[in-house]
Amino acid sequence: MVKARKELPGVGELVVATVDKIFDYGAYVKLDEYEGMDAYLPWSEVSTRWIRNIRDVIREGQKIVVKVIRVNRRRRTVDVSLKKVADNERRRKMLWWKRYVKAAKIIELIAEKIGKNIDEAYEQVIWRLEDFYGDPMYGLEEAVLRGDEALREAGIPEEWINPILEEVKRHVRVKKVKIRGTLILRSLKPHGVEDIRKVLLQIPSIAIKSGEGIKAKVYTLGAPRYIIEIEANDYKSAEKALSNILRNIEHEAKSLGMEMRFEREKR
Image (cartoon, rainbow, N blue to C red; front, side, top):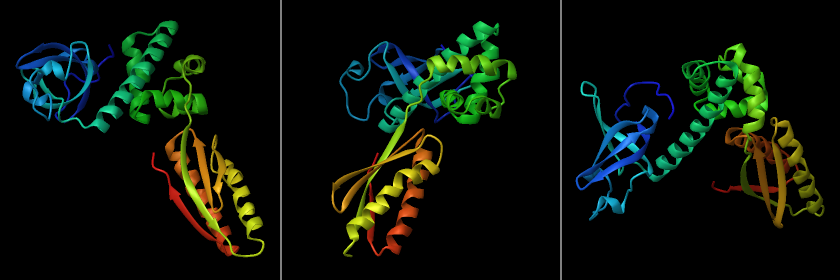
């Protein structure tokens, strides 16, 4: 159970919960992000479609993402909805939560090793990483990539920095992201094939210059179609590299009298 930053959630907030008890009229869930506090899920908020039995949708012990619809701060009661959570919201929230829990466990382990308590772990590290990066695990991944600078930027106390850097090397693996698209190049000139080859050969070197850890590969689908694949540490860097590549090769293609078009592949 992670430590909660505030006593009660706000209306409209998405929260990870565990189904506790199911009744004919609704269910009680425990809010994982609020140290297991109870919340009520009314029968009418379980599903957008008609259901005969709530157990057709949820089961005891199941992890779900709910949206807070009512909060009574005087009585400290919370009502939540399952049906008001869109599929994409559920996926994003659950992924964020899994990463948050993993980051918290790593920092709690470090705290034990250096003689810090749980409150200090959250206040001095976990919440500071969350505030600065939006996701504590992203902060730890940045520490793997950039070292102590990534931690100091987030205001992490000096006594934590070396222990964190040592621990993340063992527990954090930075996953690369990839984006792709189809580049269409045509030339009617006698030496057009060689001109196209010249343009394509520039792509990997442009990617390398676009930022640390960025790579680009080019595959042919058969002239005039070529796949460009960008690999980077995050989508923001990948998108920046792709824009840089397209801007450079568009300029080169125009100077060589080539027709150029790019079709982005959706993620």
